[in-house]
Image (tube, rainbow, N blue to C red; front, side):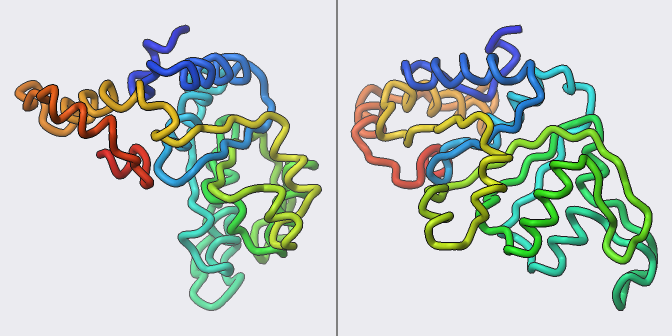
Length: 227
Protein backbone atom coordinates (compact mmCIF):
# COMPACT_ATOMS: atom_id res chain seq x y z
CA UNK A 1 0.00 0.00 0.00
CA UNK A 2 1.25 3.47 -0.78
CA UNK A 3 0.52 7.03 0.21
CA UNK A 4 -2.05 7.00 -2.63
CA UNK A 5 -4.24 5.35 0.00
CA UNK A 6 -3.72 8.39 2.18
CA UNK A 7 -5.21 11.19 0.06
CA UNK A 8 -5.44 13.55 3.05
CA UNK A 9 -1.72 13.59 3.81
CA UNK A 10 0.10 15.95 1.49
CA UNK A 11 3.82 15.27 1.54
CA UNK A 12 6.14 17.28 -0.67
CA UNK A 13 8.72 18.17 1.99
CA UNK A 14 11.44 15.71 3.06
CA UNK A 15 10.07 15.88 6.63
CA UNK A 16 6.58 14.75 5.59
CA UNK A 17 7.95 12.07 3.26
CA UNK A 18 9.85 10.74 6.26
CA UNK A 19 6.64 10.81 8.32
CA UNK A 20 4.86 8.76 5.64
CA UNK A 21 7.74 6.27 5.78
CA UNK A 22 7.39 6.04 9.58
CA UNK A 23 3.62 5.62 9.33
CA UNK A 24 4.03 2.70 6.92
CA UNK A 25 6.74 1.16 9.09
CA UNK A 26 4.76 1.27 12.33
CA UNK A 27 1.28 0.60 10.90
CA UNK A 28 1.93 -3.10 10.32
CA UNK A 29 2.71 -3.76 13.99
CA UNK A 30 0.53 -3.39 17.08
CA UNK A 31 2.89 -0.91 18.72
CA UNK A 32 1.41 2.02 20.61
CA UNK A 33 2.23 5.29 18.86
CA UNK A 34 2.49 8.81 20.27
CA UNK A 35 2.04 11.57 17.69
CA UNK A 36 3.50 14.89 18.84
CA UNK A 37 3.39 18.35 17.28
CA UNK A 38 1.79 21.76 17.57
CA UNK A 39 -1.97 22.26 17.32
CA UNK A 40 -3.29 22.08 13.77
CA UNK A 41 -0.40 20.08 12.29
CA UNK A 42 -2.61 17.09 11.40
CA UNK A 43 -1.97 14.61 14.21
CA UNK A 44 -5.38 12.98 13.76
CA UNK A 45 -4.69 12.41 10.04
CA UNK A 46 -1.51 10.56 10.98
CA UNK A 47 -3.48 8.42 13.46
CA UNK A 48 -6.10 7.61 10.80
CA UNK A 49 -3.36 6.73 8.32
CA UNK A 50 -1.76 4.32 10.82
CA UNK A 51 -5.15 2.65 11.24
CA UNK A 52 -5.87 2.50 7.49
CA UNK A 53 -2.53 0.86 6.71
CA UNK A 54 -2.72 -1.59 9.61
CA UNK A 55 -4.11 -5.14 9.77
CA UNK A 56 -6.90 -3.56 11.86
CA UNK A 57 -8.20 -1.40 9.00
CA UNK A 58 -11.53 -3.28 8.97
CA UNK A 59 -11.97 -2.62 12.69
CA UNK A 60 -13.32 0.63 14.12
CA UNK A 61 -11.25 3.81 14.39
CA UNK A 62 -12.50 5.56 17.52
CA UNK A 63 -11.29 8.99 18.55
CA UNK A 64 -11.65 10.84 21.83
CA UNK A 65 -10.41 14.33 22.71
CA UNK A 66 -9.32 14.08 26.34
CA UNK A 67 -9.47 17.86 26.80
CA UNK A 68 -13.08 18.17 25.62
CA UNK A 69 -14.81 16.44 28.55
CA UNK A 70 -15.03 16.90 32.31
CA UNK A 71 -13.10 14.32 34.37
CA UNK A 72 -16.19 12.37 35.47
CA UNK A 73 -17.59 12.19 31.94
CA UNK A 74 -14.25 11.21 30.49
CA UNK A 75 -14.05 7.99 32.52
CA UNK A 76 -17.56 6.92 31.49
CA UNK A 77 -16.85 7.90 27.86
CA UNK A 78 -13.67 5.82 27.82
CA UNK A 79 -14.71 2.76 29.85
CA UNK A 80 -18.51 2.86 29.76
CA UNK A 81 -20.79 2.39 32.75
CA UNK A 82 -23.35 -0.02 34.17
CA UNK A 83 -26.98 0.86 34.82
CA UNK A 84 -27.25 2.91 37.99
CA UNK A 85 -23.48 3.50 38.27
CA UNK A 86 -24.26 7.16 39.06
CA UNK A 87 -27.35 9.33 39.04
CA UNK A 88 -28.65 9.61 35.50
CA UNK A 89 -27.08 6.32 34.36
CA UNK A 90 -30.34 4.65 33.32
CA UNK A 91 -28.83 2.18 30.90
CA UNK A 92 -25.57 0.35 30.44
CA UNK A 93 -23.29 2.33 28.14
CA UNK A 94 -20.37 0.88 26.22
CA UNK A 95 -17.22 2.93 26.43
CA UNK A 96 -15.01 3.86 23.50
CA UNK A 97 -12.40 1.33 24.64
CA UNK A 98 -14.94 -1.43 24.09
CA UNK A 99 -16.24 0.04 20.82
CA UNK A 100 -12.65 0.10 19.52
CA UNK A 101 -12.21 -3.64 20.21
CA UNK A 102 -10.15 -5.17 17.34
CA UNK A 103 -9.67 -1.64 16.00
CA UNK A 104 -7.74 1.50 16.95
CA UNK A 105 -8.40 3.94 19.78
CA UNK A 106 -7.08 7.46 19.19
CA UNK A 107 -6.70 9.59 22.32
CA UNK A 108 -6.14 13.18 21.29
CA UNK A 109 -4.62 15.64 23.80
CA UNK A 110 -3.81 12.66 26.01
CA UNK A 111 -1.67 14.79 28.37
CA UNK A 112 -4.85 16.57 29.52
CA UNK A 113 -6.17 13.34 31.07
CA UNK A 114 -6.68 13.58 34.86
CA UNK A 115 -4.22 11.60 37.05
CA UNK A 116 -6.66 9.03 38.49
CA UNK A 117 -7.84 8.15 35.00
CA UNK A 118 -4.25 7.79 33.81
CA UNK A 119 -3.68 4.91 36.24
CA UNK A 120 -6.89 3.19 35.07
CA UNK A 121 -5.80 3.60 31.44
CA UNK A 122 -2.35 2.19 32.23
CA UNK A 123 -3.93 -0.87 33.89
CA UNK A 124 -6.30 -1.36 30.95
CA UNK A 125 -3.43 -1.22 28.45
CA UNK A 126 -1.27 -3.63 30.45
CA UNK A 127 -3.99 -6.20 31.16
CA UNK A 128 -6.02 -5.60 27.97
CA UNK A 129 -9.06 -5.50 30.23
CA UNK A 130 -10.99 -3.09 32.47
CA UNK A 131 -14.18 -2.63 34.48
CA UNK A 132 -16.99 -0.37 33.34
CA UNK A 133 -17.82 2.39 35.85
CA UNK A 134 -19.92 0.68 38.54
CA UNK A 135 -19.17 -2.75 37.04
CA UNK A 136 -17.91 -5.94 38.67
CA UNK A 137 -17.35 -8.00 35.51
CA UNK A 138 -14.08 -7.63 33.66
CA UNK A 139 -14.27 -6.63 30.00
CA UNK A 140 -11.50 -7.99 27.75
CA UNK A 141 -10.44 -5.95 24.73
CA UNK A 142 -7.95 -6.06 21.90
CA UNK A 143 -7.24 -2.43 21.07
CA UNK A 144 -4.34 -0.63 19.45
CA UNK A 145 -3.65 2.75 21.01
CA UNK A 146 -2.54 5.86 19.15
CA UNK A 147 -2.26 9.00 21.28
CA UNK A 148 -1.45 12.61 20.43
CA UNK A 149 -0.33 15.67 22.31
CA UNK A 150 0.74 19.23 21.57
CA UNK A 151 2.61 19.38 24.89
CA UNK A 152 6.22 18.45 25.56
CA UNK A 153 5.87 14.94 27.10
CA UNK A 154 9.01 15.19 29.27
CA UNK A 155 7.92 18.58 30.59
CA UNK A 156 4.48 17.17 31.48
CA UNK A 157 6.18 14.43 33.49
CA UNK A 158 8.53 16.80 35.33
CA UNK A 159 5.58 19.09 36.12
CA UNK A 160 3.77 16.10 37.60
CA UNK A 161 0.72 16.26 35.32
CA UNK A 162 1.45 13.01 33.47
CA UNK A 163 2.63 9.62 34.70
CA UNK A 164 6.05 8.53 33.45
CA UNK A 165 5.05 4.83 33.36
CA UNK A 166 2.02 5.64 31.19
CA UNK A 167 4.17 7.69 28.82
CA UNK A 168 6.54 4.74 28.34
CA UNK A 169 3.53 2.52 27.67
CA UNK A 170 1.97 4.79 25.02
CA UNK A 171 5.21 6.05 23.52
CA UNK A 172 6.65 2.83 22.10
CA UNK A 173 7.08 4.76 18.84
CA UNK A 174 6.96 8.53 18.44
CA UNK A 175 6.07 10.46 15.31
CA UNK A 176 6.74 14.17 15.57
CA UNK A 177 5.06 16.41 12.99
CA UNK A 178 7.03 19.59 12.36
CA UNK A 179 5.09 22.87 12.15
CA UNK A 180 4.09 24.11 8.70
CA UNK A 181 6.58 27.00 8.82
CA UNK A 182 9.41 24.42 8.94
CA UNK A 183 8.20 22.60 5.83
CA UNK A 184 7.20 25.36 3.47
CA UNK A 185 7.30 23.05 0.43
CA UNK A 186 4.01 21.61 1.69
CA UNK A 187 2.15 24.94 1.86
CA UNK A 188 1.24 25.28 -1.82
CA UNK A 189 0.12 21.64 -2.35
CA UNK A 190 -1.88 21.70 0.91
CA UNK A 191 -3.52 25.00 -0.08
CA UNK A 192 -4.52 23.55 -3.47
CA UNK A 193 -5.78 20.35 -1.84
CA UNK A 194 -7.88 22.32 0.68
CA UNK A 195 -9.28 24.59 -2.04
CA UNK A 196 -10.42 21.61 -4.10
CA UNK A 197 -11.86 19.95 -1.02
CA UNK A 198 -13.80 23.03 0.04
CA UNK A 199 -14.81 24.44 -3.36
CA UNK A 200 -15.06 21.24 -5.43
CA UNK A 201 -14.17 20.98 -9.12
CA UNK A 202 -14.61 24.70 -9.81
CA UNK A 203 -12.10 25.69 -7.15
CA UNK A 204 -10.57 29.14 -7.73
CA UNK A 205 -7.02 29.24 -9.03
CA UNK A 206 -4.23 30.45 -6.79
CA UNK A 207 -2.20 33.21 -8.43
CA UNK A 208 1.59 33.21 -8.13
CA UNK A 209 1.32 36.24 -5.87
CA UNK A 210 -1.16 34.47 -3.58
CA UNK A 211 1.13 31.44 -3.38
CA UNK A 212 4.13 33.64 -2.56
CA UNK A 213 2.17 35.28 0.27
CA UNK A 214 0.99 31.93 1.63
CA UNK A 215 4.48 30.43 1.54
CA UNK A 216 6.01 33.49 3.22
CA UNK A 217 3.53 33.47 6.12
CA UNK A 218 4.43 31.81 9.43
CA UNK A 219 1.16 29.85 10.13
CA UNK A 220 1.27 29.64 13.92
CA UNK A 221 -2.00 27.67 13.71
CA UNK A 222 -0.48 25.37 11.08
CA UNK A 223 -2.70 23.51 8.57
CA UNK A 224 -5.85 24.32 10.55
CA UNK A 225 -5.12 28.04 10.18
CA UNK A 226 -4.24 27.65 6.49
CA UNK A 227 -7.60 25.96 5.93
